[in-house]
Image 1 (tube, helix red, strand yellow):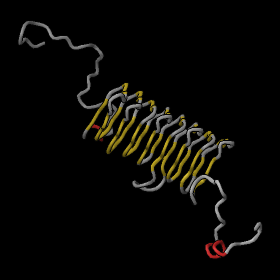
Image 2 (cartoon, helix red, strand yellow; image 1 turned 60 degrees about the vertical axis):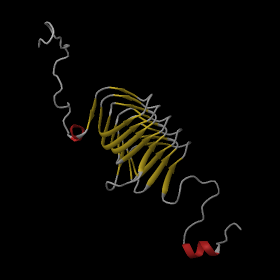
Image 3 (tube, one colour; image 1 turned 135 degrees about the vertical axis):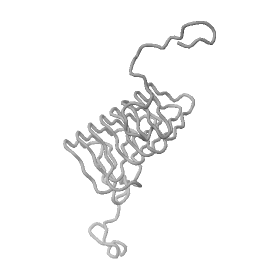
Image 4 (tube, helix red, strand yellow; image 1 turned 180 degrees about the vertical axis):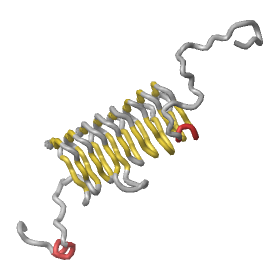
Length: 194
């Protein structure tokens, strides 16, 4: 049947999918054997199984366990957007409305999202403007700012946590935070103030 067009092919105008092909129609795939040097801009969805040395901009993203990006990941489009699913390693920051870091996923430059769910490792902190869920296997090295936070037993945050309305502000330091690192010591007897 090589070279012959099927009736379905003629009507749809599309090439039939290859057996065993990964990704759905409209998804760009960077295979395990590929390494791309330079920024990658995709109008639709991208699945990365190989390596990209540069920033990636896409409407939605799936970074496979075998994949790595040495740069930032940024969502294009509106607030809704597709979820950025991270199962491999990102040596940069992830900026997307929805981010999910899998148990083997690692983000070395932090996460900036509306909603995030973390099962893996994130360094340099997380900003979640709506909701952040840290699962049992999550490890966050850095500060966390989240309007709503769900931290499951076993999940770790090695940094400051700011929640609620203060988390939505753009201040670098939480309001009311001390500018000194000296401990506060109360002196005096019972009921005495320092």
